[in-house]
Length: 234
Image (cartoon, rainbow, N blue to C red; front, side, top):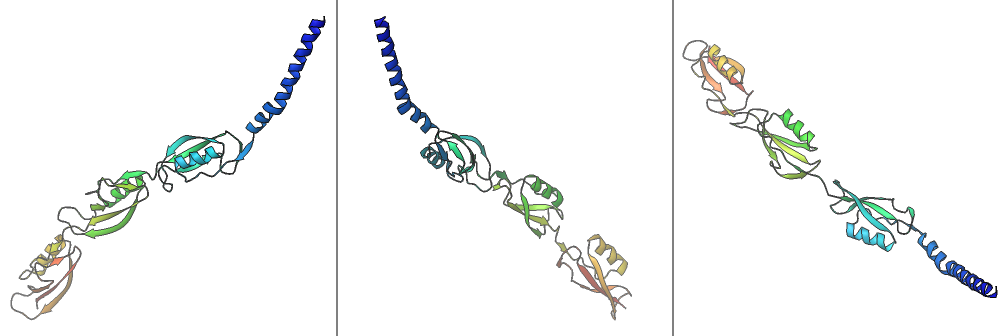
């Protein structure tokens, strides 16, 4: 019986020592593990720097997504979760979204397309129509795209403006109408998409109604829709 009591006392002593050790050693460790910290702001930091800042704060990090962003540079943090200044337990994992930079878009080939169709393609790609210039062209019909700036196959950012150069059509030369009657001249002028202007009767040699002077003179460069004025024999 005495031996049993001795063993019992020894066990109790070790049990008490164990409780004391738990109270002074283990419990403080558990409490410290549950300590709260404020999440630092790592938005717009490079990924390596963000990871280091979080680690110093006693937090872990994981990249949960990589996506395009028009503002944040490639390799930097777009957003974090939990948000900055949130109180969390030490050791908490912070989810990070990393930027791939602005989305790159290849300028399409639009030469020869009508402006409305070209604009539709530009809009669909998330780009914008920028300045529009017009020049004459012997090969591209009026109102169609001659060229874009930047050129096709160039990489641009989403939302960038594309300059379009449209054709004004073929640059015309005025026909030689001298010696013709008004009716014949009207047909020629109309077929060339020019406009008949003033018809002035003047004294001159030749049959009445015959053209003796035109303005602009023959072989002058004119635009479609320009006016030709005539002088005819009175």
